[in-house]
Image 1 (cartoon, rainbow, N blue to C red):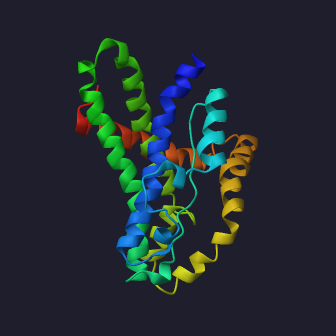
Image 2 (cartoon, rainbow, N blue to C red):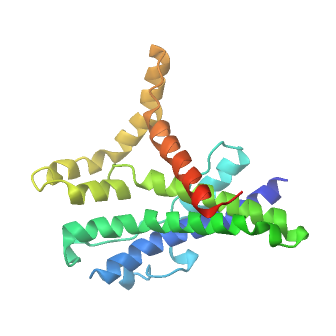
Length: 224
C-alpha cells in the first residue's frame, strides 16, 4: 500500500514543481532576461529543475511518515531582474507565472476528475488518485509561494508593487528569511501553546486560502 500511495504522488509532485519553475524561466526569457535560458532552465524536462532534497527526499519522507500534508520544492530559477525590460513590472509577472501555472494545472486536474468515470476499471482508481493529488498539491504550492515573504513569489510581487521608497526597506528582510520562517513555523505556535492561544499563523495563512481555492476549482470544473 505504501508503494501504491507513493506511485500516486510521483507524477503530481514532479509535474507541479517542474511546470512551476519552467513558467518562471519562460516568463523571464520572454521579458528579456537570458539567464535561465543560458543555464538550460527554459525547459519542461524535470531533470533540469529537480532538487534531490526538495523534490525527492522531502516529499518521500513526508509520505513515509504519513504526514497530513505534502510539500516539496525545486531548484530556484536564476533571474537577473535588472536585465528585464521593465524590472519592477516584469519582476511581478515572472513571480506570478509560477503560481498561475499551478492553478492552471489544478484546473486541468479538476476537469480530469469530472470525466474520470469513463476510464477502464483497472486504471480508474490510480488515475483518479493522481488527479486528486495533483489538484490539492498544485493549489497548496500556489498558495505557499504567494506568501509575502522574500524570496517566495509573493514577496517578489509585493516588492514590485511597493512604492519606491518602501521597496528597498522590504528587500532588506530577505537575508532573514529563514529566521522569519522558523519564527512563523515553530516559535509562534510554541508561544501560543504556552499562552493558551492559537498563534499558528502560517498554517492558517496557507490552509484557509488553499481550502477556498480547492473548493473553487472543484466548483468551476464540476469535479466530483
